[in-house]
Amino acid sequence: MLRLAFDIAGSNREGEIVDCLIPVRRFDAPQLVRHIGRPVLVFRAGDGDRLNFVGSAVLGGLVPSSPDSRSVVAELVEVKAFPRAVRHGGLPRAEGVPWISLPTVMFETILEHARGAGGSAGLEEAAAVFTYDASVLPPLETFAALDGAVKRNYGHSCALTGQSEAERTADVELQVVPIRPLVEGGGVHVSNCLLLAPAAAEAFALGHLTVAGDLRLIVDISRVAPELLGVLNPSGRLAVPADESVQPDRRHLAWHRRRFFSLMD
Image 1 (spheres, helix red, strand yellow):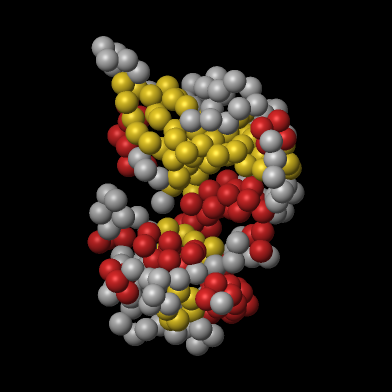
Image 2: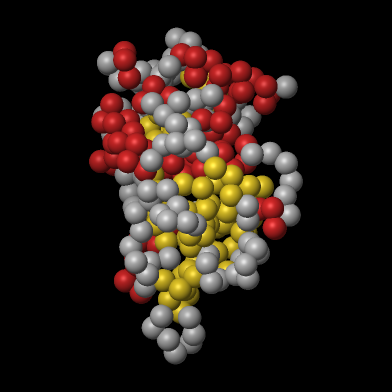
């Protein structure tokens, strides 16, 4: 599943990260409308082809720019500045288009880096650029290749529920999810990723369930939604690829278990 990021240059006074309206092309609306209510990133263009990701927001809706206008604006709400911006280059942009799409793994990695920077920051400090090594935050092509490889390895099916992409609806797309975030020592590798349906991905990320060393599912039934509980694999185990070289790294699963049990304390 692809995620969105919006260019807020010209939508806010310099240094401010606030709710705003972004003019978009009318024929882009069908692509954008699927993301209404979902988190997005916000960025400003930097030097050369670099983008400075400066905060997160929620795509609140798409509305006419005026009652009599055929122009459309994207409404960004719940805009929150990052403690420090995350700078990244090599992301393709169409000229005049104020948004880009990112693979889910890359979207989550940017969020993890931004939140892991630590410390509080005012608006002036939030606008400063914090640069990560290319070895830590790889180029877009790496994430795109990772996304495709994980989907193939898992047969385009959710590892926790068995739901396949062939069964998905417009509102349900399988997501490539890291087991252990990069900022916590995880790697950009298929062995650190699972393919999950949205509800399963959210529960896994929040630590509502985890996976034992023998791949049995460990579930906190007080926190997992009944709807998800009812569709987990009947075997009670995580489904993994037959090829052991691309199966989940047991060290990353162990890290996730420790986090799961720490949240129960």
